[in-house]
Structure formats: C-alpha cells, structure tokens
Length: 277
Image (cartoon, rainbow, N blue to C red; front, side):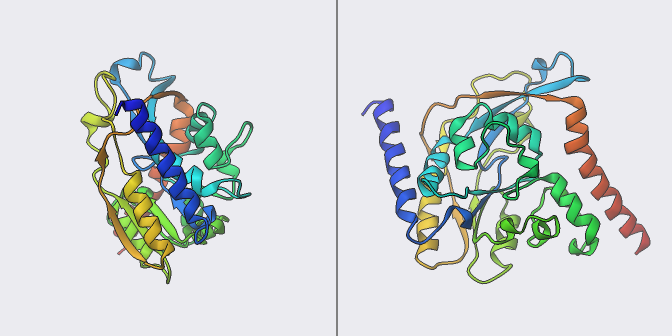
C-alpha cells in the first residue's frame, strides 16, 4: 500500500469515527489544549535575525486529530472548544493559514480568538486569577501553564467548563479535569515532545517525526460515548501524513504582552503569597 493510499484510508476512517460519535457526543463536549496536543512547534534559533522585532515559529498541526474532530463537528453550529496556555494572536495566524483548523474551531477570517466565548487563553487565566487568587490552592510551581476547572467561568467563558472531555498533553491537567465533576474524562496524549532540543533547535531540519495519537483518541472518545469516565492514556503510533509546517511571525511586543507578562504577573503574586505565609 502506498503512503498516499494509507493516508487516505486513515483520513476516511477517522472522519467516519468522528461522525459516529455524534450520537453521544457534541463538539461542545470536547475541549482541547493546543501546544503539544493539536500541534508541535519549532523555533529555530538561526532563523531569528531580528529577535528584538519578533520571531518566526513553525507549527506542525496534528492533521489526523483534526480529521477526527472535523468528523465530530460536521455541520454542527457550535465548534470544538479551546483551552490553552498560549495566546490569541498566534492562534489567529495559524487559523488564517489552515482552513481545516479554522473550520473545526470556527476561527474564520476576521475572528479574534481572544474575544470568542469558546476559546480560553493565557489572558483568561490571569483575569480569573485576579478575581479569585485562592483558586490556586498552593503557590508552588508554574501555574500559568496549568488548567484549573472553574477558572474559565471566572474569566467569563463558562462554555469551557461545560465541556465533558479534555484532550491535553499534561497528565496533571487531565487528572484535575476528570476529577472535577461527574461524567468527566481526560484524554492524556502521552509522549508528546517537550525538550528544548526538539522545540528550539539551531536549525529547522526535517521537522517533527511522522506519528500521531488520533486513533487512540478516537478509541477514548468512543469509550466516553459508552459512558466511561476518568483518565484515558493514549500513546502515539508511527505514520500519518507528511508534516507540513506553517510559518507564523509573531511581533516581539505581542509576545511580551500576551505571553511573558501574564506569566510574570501570576508568578509575582504567588511569590508574595509565599513571603506572607
């Protein structure tokens, strides 16, 4: 079987499995993380000639997972939900270049993801934290990258907390979500790359390896549709389509405003809590 035939068969299978899930799951039931869950990202150091002006990231979408979610969404009026520790401008620039990603998450031309009720970002974490700092029960660790049920509602986006299933690359997030209420499940994509040598190499090279988690995620969602809850662990399988990177240019000012400063604000507040204890 040629690679192109195998990829076409994989796409048909995942779309069909997504469609079959509609009897028990809606797109609004599913909440997904982005970095390391929906895509790999690579920031080659030698590709950044003017870092004081901004940088370029290469985003490698997990297309098989998008096929599955697109099958689930179909023509439903509401999209799959996003809960990320990233920021909106980056999401918008990816959506502008990939129609499938834009369709699954309803991020068409002119849509500002930060303003959407079905998208929670780093800024939403900060808005919730300002209202109720005690929602972070202990100050140890870097909480800005964690997901705490209830915080989306505090930020004015209850649609995220209404979800039943979280797809995430962090076990802690999946376990916290699954234990936060009856009928909830976390799907942990185990083994996604995190080392700096993968994400911040000197040169782009050949990009991330061809592997995907989509068939395991489909199995987990089918189990949820049958009434199972808790945490599902999904490991990658080799194969899938060729990884085509999307180049995303991000201005330095936006990175500081939307990525750096929210993290610093939360870290400062947690340090003050430790000092006052």
